[in-house]
Length: 256
Length: 218
Image (tube, rainbow over all chains, first blue to last red; front, side, top):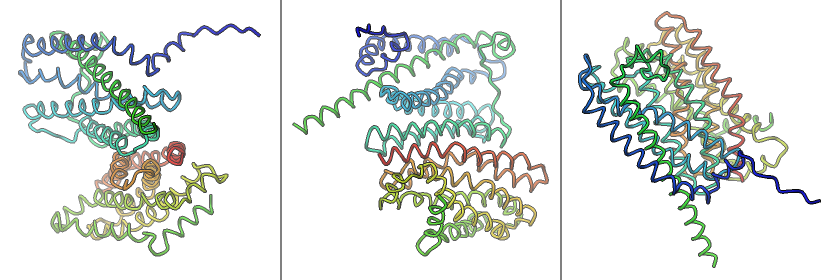
């Protein structure tokens, strides 16, 4: 009965990355690079966008807020998506790092939602003549914000870590379903002022939407925001892992 | 399961069960509205559908933490968990008992209170129908929220914070249906979507809530 040890498949190796110890290892090596890339692309994207693009014919210089507004909105939605995936992975595979990543993603995503709402309001005042309208897109972002708040509140309300992880994951999944529902319900409720999607990756559609002069710096600042999100996510997750370890050490101290 | 349902209904109807509380709260909200907005009849008629839906929704919130809270404290829920009945069924029984004691009376009372807000008879009928179709979702979502916040001490505020965003779609479709009737437009679509949410909640939430209960009782 000398069965050979089975060689780990690529799938196994992938999941091994989520082992807390390996995670702390590779994330500490990767983090400085991602942070540097985030800083570089954010700075160059924003400076390019703010100082080296012409004013729009109709919107004047207010158009430039797009370099903050669109990437923040993008990351607000992807942040919730990431929380959803993290919750699923935790419930199915019990990977602690994934639920800690979901926990770390929530405050970042919430701030991104706030940035998108605030920049939208600042832009809306000169353009639409009002800071706020009950437009479908604005309303769904406000609801998304409420979902983030609820998720964070539930995390902080439950003392036992694993129970909190389980319950918030259930909430995140049900919340994702209802967030989608609200998105379409709100469309039914009111026709909007907000323009449709102007940024699409499809080449054919790009021509009529937004000209390259604005599009290239926007793309750069979108990349910058994504990398910034990733940086903050990694830092947050590492903090959570460390705080778990501290708690274990404290418990051990108390026993001895 | 039927036993449990009857027990819950009985408990809430008897004195101290809070059966009448939701109705009285609803009445008070409707009474306070004209004080806040002025007694103008035509203005009241315009906002009546929304106010009545919102009032019913808030009245539903009041009794949510009772659904599981008392049974969790005195250990009944632990016994139920060890009984052959799955926790999903416990959830369904308790959510339907909650609906029967709050959702149903609220729906029937809404057109009557609508008279106070100058709501005409035809619109009142649709309001009643939309509440009948929509309140099951409110009870189901609320019971799910209650099962999430079971272990949290003084979780009432947290419960409302979690549940209210989930109520958004039902509120939109429900009050929209009544408003469309008021304007003499087609309202079928809103009612159909409203029932779709109730049915969808009934299909999905038992499993989510069963999982949450199991985690809390661990």
